[in-house]
Image (tube, rainbow, N blue to C red; front, side, top):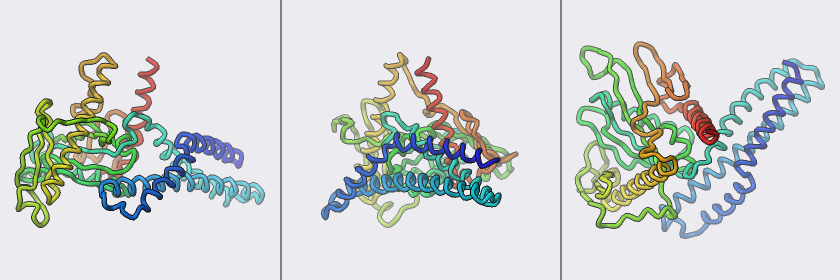
Length: 373
């Protein structure tokens, strides 16, 4: 490619980045940073741990967004200077450096552009992720545990704080179910494309005859409720049961009746939490999950009315959305976006960004097509 070609690419990248800066509102991000820093400096901030964690998490996120945008702008400016140097010296070696810089900037700007596609009502919320084993017996339970680790590793890669509310262990291996929170803004908008049924094909490590087994696990992603959501739950509509936690646990977790099960009588929704030592802590966490489930139920009912449907469940438990094949070949493939990779071990270790980004773009195209219909 010629210097003129690279100049055109940089011009296009600059236009894309300017659009991203406008959509994300860099000025507002700096205002948010100043406000959150002021809130974080209050001496008694940690008297309310929930609020303190929310403030520090939001501040970390805003700082990260500002840093990413600043780094991209600086990188683009540096690439432009490098291109001018290559043209002035007619040096093909420097031109090769420009190409390398443009390749890296293109990938980084495309990743940042994904954030501009998260414009849903609840997309800016933190996320609650629920995983449960489906058909496939012990293999399904093991698969559910693999998915839990996959999402926690994905969050860890990005530096996103998480909190596991509930893990219900299966008898032989793996998990019956698990619920955890990803405590960073836009976690819901980002992870909501992961909702659906996941399918695993492999030689079962639990089959002494070494046969191939297909198993399933469901993933549900909910937005965390906020005070403005007005999800009132009268006490007489909730049955509270306490019991002793099961499975691995720290000191006192398995020795007292600290686990809590909430049953919302009108809807039949059941939520459990057992990962804290205190019954009160478990009850508070379970109530947050119940509120999130009721908010999602309300959202789906409102959307169903708007669309004139009795049931709107796009991206819910029944939709098979991704296959993880470990035998007779190695492949992970998203059945909606056609995104695939031949490195399942990387995916199970949290390398999910390409699938999530493809899912967000796919969802946006469907939304635009629906609006134009």
